[in-house]
Length: 170
Image: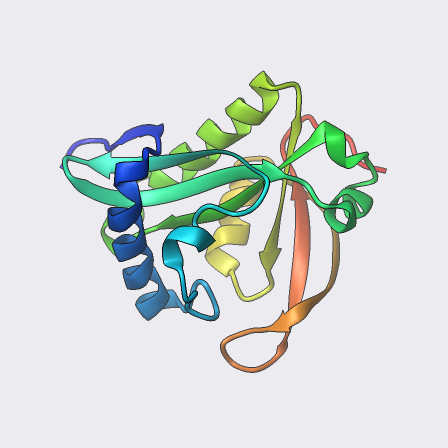
């Protein structure tokens, strides 16, 4: 297996993205609650762009860049119009340990920077592998807070906010 191609997501990719997401949900409980409309969940309000990692016809991973809400911006200490949020980042089991998540993260971070924005994200405390990825990539922890939802195991989500390398925080 060679390196997958990272490219902008097209509308015709949504079905394969939802199928890949289903495998991630079954294995990892991400997202914590399966969405009634997976395609809609993969296309959140305020989306600035979406990318996929593909190997031939197979979608191995996905990420979006969205506008940043006021709560996340306050966590970082910058106005929301200076930020872009990384969201809906996942890789399938077959893509793990191949650098696919890192490549998607680098792509979306570069897209934010190309738009003059600082990339930020939040990750739930149970996402140890995701936290390790962000920290290996040089992202800085900017704070933590309780979420307004519960995890698959029934606890209140604890969200950690991260800022891309080079981005300032208060």
